[in-house]
Image (cartoon, rainbow, N blue to C red; front, side, top):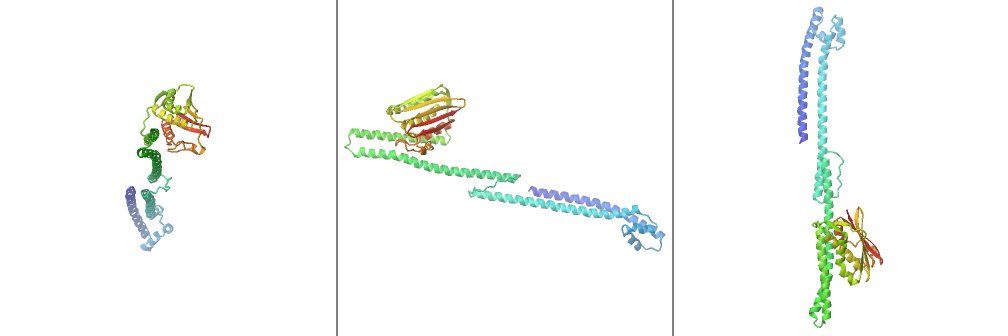
Length: 399
């Protein structure tokens, strides 16, 4: 639309310019013609007055002889150099008018040609954009359309390219999310199936077998309770993880002494420690403050210490060391139990992952939940281990 307006405006101005130039030349030409006719009459009069034997036809042939006519007229005793300049100017001005008109015409052709080529290039780019949009509609995001040229169309192409990259990433993320959900559902199904099957078998025995003694019945009920507790822990942990997945967890960060955090964790695992006669040693060089959500961090560290207890030997020891610097506060939890196999070390924080040394009672979700809680609350967790020797969990809370 802009090109059309430009062409119309340019054409109007050019035509108006040509008309004005031609009008000026026509007016000037008329003046030259008047002078020309006047001089011709004057020359003819002079010649015919002095030379009766020469005809008008011969006079005109002399005058039309260009530069040689001056010499011929001089032979007749007539000197008209100034007048002859006027005669020549008429012809010269006519040539200039023709040259100017031709030049303007060529310029207009070049201008229209440039506009045409520019419009053709724009149409080509627009067709490319249309094809790209069709590819997007067909979910084809594998085309590289980066354009390093300048201009609004090139900017539009680059924006479409960015959109295609974003859609490609979202499509890939959506696929990965679906795959992750599928795997998670399979894992959840497997985790629930085992305890539910165990509960079902024991309940069937309790119902169908009237000859069971009270001790056996009690053992069955205790086992059922353990399996129910395992299912309860799994469901609660999954609900908590799902809240982190959708970013609805809001931390209530406050300043707490590190001793308060560690003491609450030890209280949570005291019964488990008593069952295996495990001693927890705490080494705090300075009772520094931590800015965090106490309830969530207690749960995270409790899951880590539970994992250490699970893999510790009876009468074992767990060391908790706390230190602080200008960049971060560090809590180190170390057990001296079975350790972690090298193949399992990079996977222990994955959901439902069970290593070779994991007990049958584990559900493989506690460490995953702990990592999610810590790293969402401006922390970082890492692990080092030597099989049949030790395992060290290192938690850093950045300031």
